Image (cartoon, rainbow, N blue to C red; front, side, top):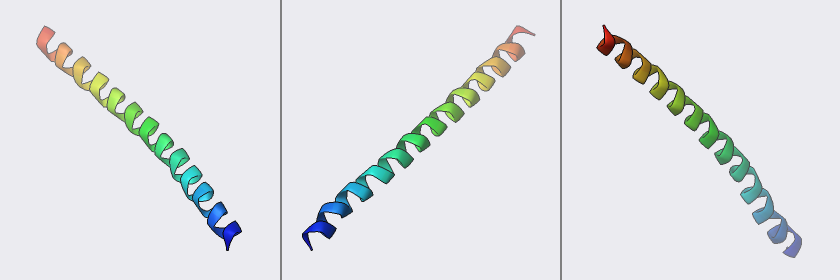
Length: 48
C-alpha cells in the first residue's frame, strides 16, 4: 500500500504539470498571434 500511495502523487503531479505548461504556452501563442493580427488590422484601417 505504501508503494502505491508513494507512486500515485508523483505520476498525477508530473503529467498535469507538463500538460498545463503545454496548454499555457499554446494559449499564450494564440493570444499573441490574435492580438498581433488585430492590432495590425486596426492600424491598417486607421491609416487609410
